[in-house]
Amino acid sequence: MSQPLGANALPARSTSGPTLVERAYDHLLSLLMTVKIAPGERIPIDTVARQLGISQTPIREALSQLEAEKLVYKTTNVGYRASPQMTPEEVHDLYTLRLLIEPYAAACAAEHMDDEALSILQAIQADMDAVVERDEQAYARFAEADAQLHRLIAKGSGNRLIEETIERLHAHLQIFRSLYQNSAQPNAPEVAAREHQRIIAALLAHDPAAAEQSVRDHLTCSQQRMDRANGTSRG
Image (cartoon, rainbow, N blue to C red):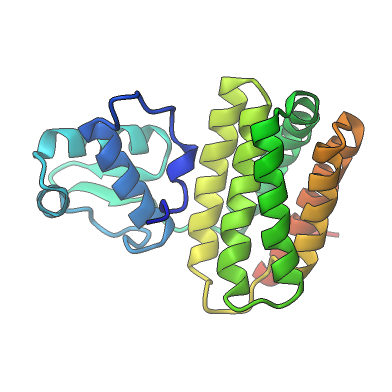
């Protein structure tokens, strides 16, 4: 069974397998990112514990981690709720922050790509090609390939703080996108796929300058598309 979107964005697991807290974190993150727990919705700890067959203690620890990442919040006498839906202005600001971080991360990643990472890039490229060719379920495949590419860039930066920041920003953005999964997609998969192809080509060529510029171009265009879709275009 494939991992839920976002599962690869977690800290490295021990060889003995995920802990109960990590299992709870993965489960909750998946529910949040697929909007099975909607923004603002209460998170019933007892129900989650029954679903996973574990006690409430690791659920609470996982929720504390998610609270630190601003994905949930705690209210007195109520408990935890999913964070409110991001506003269009917050989405714009999120992209602005990504523009400050991800181009640099891409330049670093281009210099340090190993054989395993290059193999993953080639697989991502194949999925992107399928999107351009209007393969069935194109958006779902695009979304997963997009997430995988950005995780790879984040990890390739070699900077754990940058990696964690990119992963958290992407989690917030994916929740926003999931809310509009059945409407017109502001990120235009076919157009974005071509932008990703330029990023992948630069990474495969170990070209830091091209990788940095292609990521900057992609994020700028993506921000503009999102702004137009949200009615927040800026002159």
